Length: 229
Image 1 (tube, rainbow, N blue to C red):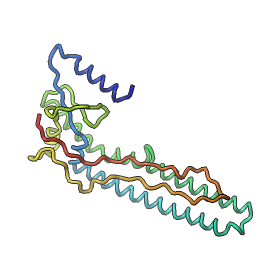
Image 2: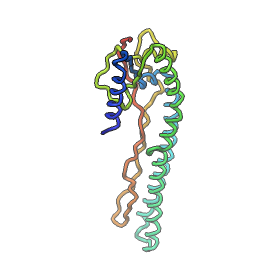
Image 3: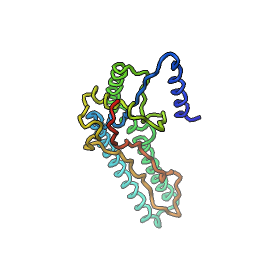
């Protein structure tokens, strides 16, 4: 059983647990949409983009060094002894492995980009959590769901959408209600391309440098319907 299915069943049990006693009130919000309207989130994405650009440039420099090593090896191969060839090949292989390791460290699973995203997004997430608590107490709700979470919502009645109320608690309410926020500095962070060396019959590598290392990307801002609970 998958995690989201298990949570869905648990939610159903919770919703039905006290139905005989009294009707349960619940609502949902769109946290992605809310975050897209928050200046803290936009600033976090700008910082992440700058960090990504810096790391990408560092990898590009390393790739150029690797390419230079390989070209020199090809140009001088005919005059090299077997021992010298082996030494050069090991140097190239080591450089490839270093680049792959650095790329994984910065952009891999739970790498520096992942950790920095968690750190920079936390202030905005904490503010949303506090606002949700206030809305739940004020509107006397028993449950509040996130339509972008693990809980799969096959259908959501706009009547139960409390996104705008949370925005109002954050001071971001608008008369136009639930219009998409300005794109501005909110950018998608893309991973760099993994460096590769030209194939040479006399030189074999098992570094796996051809495998792509992907960084998590932030989802784009989307619009929401304007129905008020």
